[in-house]
Length: 443
Image 1: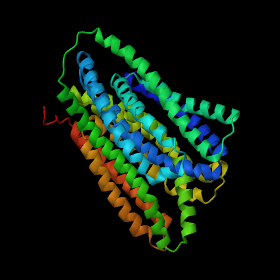
Image 2 (image 1 turned 90 degrees about the horizontal axis):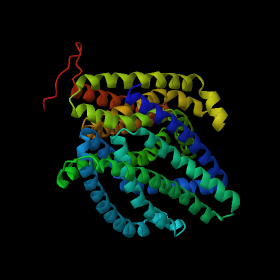
Image 3 (image 1 turned 180 degrees about the vertical axis):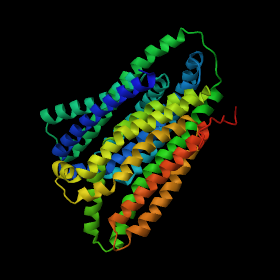
């Protein structure tokens, strides 16, 4: 079995188990926090994830790309400079977060200690990101797989133990829930740090070559900044989209209450079911970045073309049966897990959206590996503008409403997939109809 398929298999199994454990985590949270507590939990969670995203600084992506593109003799020097950059970045972000967190209104309704929990996560996330990027670049996917599963398993164990043996009021229960999240991240931090130190001791014994700190910082920032910008852009558009959708279907003639219910059925039920198989696409995302980076750095265009074909076929292999099952078994699925019959219609209409999404995630990883992060960002901007425009134009029509919204979402997801795919084909030399290999102009 090739390194790619072996690493992919390990990640898929671990991620699937992690998804199952996360489902159990959400069940415990819903039971212990209640409807109101769960609402407060989900309200503050995106803000906490934003700070975690900033602390991460997409270092796993940039470091894995850098490690994969260079010989092992450069790794020691590279990691030294990367760690220095991480320490400086963490220090600056900690100071800024300490200033900003107390004045963010959303934190005023929560336990005062929650701000300190978020602050404690910043250095943990940054150093963990460095170690994760190193192992991704070395294609030691077993470490990444274990860390993914470990995060969920530790959180489940902490939640089960704390809520079983102790009683908390509503405010403290929320704080405990977030502390278990922080605790799981800390355990992952210790696990990856331990193995990183062991690996670093090994590369210290290899005769090393020196790389300038300026070059390393330049390589990391060139990838991390646009990739972080892309993630933030997605976060912002996902935050705006619910309001746009509800505005559109209210304009189509629904009451605000009905609009909220329909959006809840689409986002909370149909998308929860439809996005479940995407854990396979997320596994592709992790392993493709270093694999593509290494092959592109070595000018192996035939390998890149074959790898793209493998990714497309594997995605079709699981994606098409999944969306087919969602379409024909929509009502049993929504009724069994969520007791909602109307959400089945939305699940059926969103089938193309889910399928295109399964393809888009690995295509984005391909673009990052090829050094086309800017293109990935621009494609997202174009597709989002088109999606929002169609949501407004079609969703506000009385005869369409939510169906018009979904047409807009399906169209936008198809456009971004085509833009990603055509850009990749152009970069690695796939042409039609002869499919000749066209060498990159840089070489």
